[in-house]
Image (tube, helix red, strand yellow):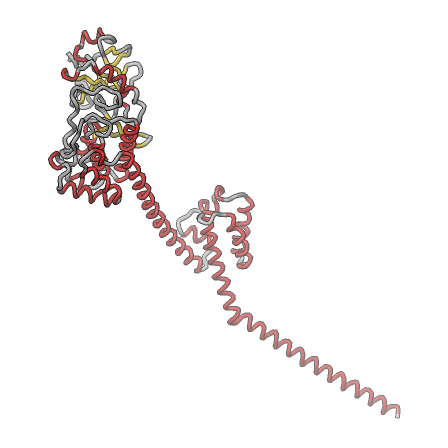
Length: 469
């Protein structure tokens, strides 16, 4: 009987040895998950400890055609999101001894174990996701479905229970499971076609067959809308159960439909809301948007969201820098040195912006800055302003160091303007007046000396004449 009653059992499957993994919450019970066609057990390969899945089908689904189907599925295992397509089927040709012990494993499939949560688990638990997480989930699913559509593939049974989500170091990972009814050109049609999951079946679209390349467009569109809108608390709280919509609400005018449209419109714009409305009102599969259209709309929405966030971030940074610049300018106007201002702003001497070696093109520029700072300290404003002006060209226009040098230059220019005003009002004018007065005094003394000298000469001549006579 499978699963065996023993707590630990080793299974030899096609030249590899496995052990049934224990349920994480119930000791001694194998870890299994029930599905529509059977139960999936978690295996651990003993040689390397890697996890695998063993899908044991119910008797009505143990079809010999599963061997051929596995060979067909393996061709698509490298496509993004179709990891579960890689599988080996247990049959009497390769596993006689195993089947003699556990006949329930006839046509069971061994495939990679996919870690994560199904979308219906996230919906039923009302798990909170951010807008970015929702967009990443939807983009990953749209990319997988687009690739499938380009290869002429369709899952044919898309629903929240067949969508696995997990977060990896590379980002969001989306995987489709229950691939036994995957449509592909030239593949054999199953005897029993999937009926579709509740909450994802269209009552209006007339299908000639549930077996075709476009049958995923309607349920896939609903899944994408759910993934995108799940960031909204109202959507989460008003979800029906394992899906957002109740089965009898599909393609009907109802409160959940109106809320979905409003949410997509407010979060992602009219493009995304328009795609959902096309799905909702479709009477034929061809009227539903292709998954490539969904992917393009998602890229546009992502770009718009990134630009909005970048704009908000830049505005916040600009406002913060403006406040810091104003505080710095106020302190400089009060006569503080730039070093004192930096310390008062909470910076350490060794952490001042101009002290970071990696921000200077070379040592020569650092020396020029030291020279400019020394001239500023000595109060030689014109020379300091000249040196700072030569320095500023070494740095990009939007660099923080360039802005800091510009602030210092503005402060020095203010001091120069103030000094010139004072000179005009008093100092320089008085100096010129003093120079003019001195010049006038010197001119008067010179004239008097000339007159006295001339008079003395005349007197001397008269005296000589008198003496001779």
